[in-house]
Amino acid sequence: MSGRDDKKIGFLVSGRGSNMAAVLEEIAAGRLKAEARVAISDNPEAPALALASGRGLPAVTIERKNFPRRQEFEEALVRVLKEHGVGLVVLAGFMRLLGPTLLSAFPGRIINIHPSLLPAFPGLEAQRQALEYGVKIAGCTVHYVNEVMDGGRIIAQAAVPVEPDDTAESLGARILTQEHRLLALAIAGL
Ligand code: GAR
Image 1 (cartoon, helix red, strand yellow):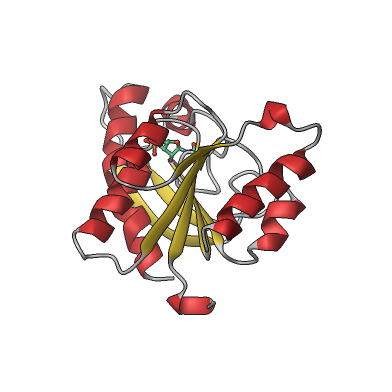
Image 2 (spheres, helix red, strand yellow):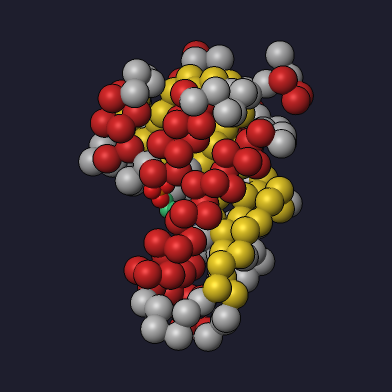
């Protein structure tokens, strides 16, 4: 299967997993016509792993340090994703740049969520970057993934105001609420 009908999702995660959980909830409630197949973490300590298995989703750890080069690491990721019949790869807090092995295995079928209005503030601590720059509007972006960090074509964005007394945490929480909504919406529209 390919194209618009292929919403068999494989999540790549590194941490908390709240974006993955939001998508799982939309699927479970019948509001998002998609199927979750597997969650893969590069971090064995990621809370997202327990969260996935708690919801009956196979949860797999694949650590970068167990492979000599990125190519072998990505081959392992591709193997597990294909074994689970994944047709759409969703990066939900996966803190790694992807290379040609993974990108070419799922052409045009890998998306990412990022907590800024790209192309502003790519990379780590986007919420803190936005606050330090002094922007008055912040937000989040769902985009296709390419080899450039947070660089692929934009699918959807949501904006939030920056309040005068915001900290990176309070702004991050406001953005996160929108992330949870936007990711499921973006997947629905693919
Ligand atoms: C989210 O805010 C996501 O946008 C961000 O990591 C957090 C993961 O939270 N991703 C990036 O910064 C990618 N460049 P979660 O694990 O609770 O979904």
